Amino acid sequence: FALPDDDFDVLVTPLESAPADMVGSRIAHLDWGLYAGQAWLDRHPAPPAAGRLAGYAVIAASGSLAEVEAYRWFAGLGGEPVASATSPLAMAELAAHGVGIALLPRLVAAGDGRLTELAFSGLPRSDVWMVAKRATAERPPVAAFLKWSRRNLKERARAES
Image: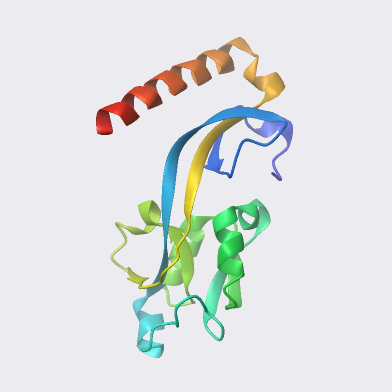
């Protein structure tokens, strides 16, 4: 992560696993989709070929977001980066304005009527982790919050099953 150690107590982010210098737990999953705005769709009536974005304008991830597994997968599809952002919310805005195709969490894009999900197979799914630096996790307020959240998130997951 590009965040200095003292910039956060607890971080919620998509990860493959908790980094070695952190403790945490998996709390959710993110499903992803490829999205574009109407202006982009008007210029590109033919959908991208399965598994490739070569020749298509894409909105790339930058900063620590580019390290997220799903965005590494997206970068491997061969699109032509025309813009980049460090936030999925900024990517959604760019896509909505017709700049290019964005990989977005469905949770972010679902309520935005300006975005259309493109049919595309093999989309990733990411684990969402709540993590804290080991030393930070030992501080009583942070330890209490982590314990409370683990217990409550597990109960919520059981209730939704």
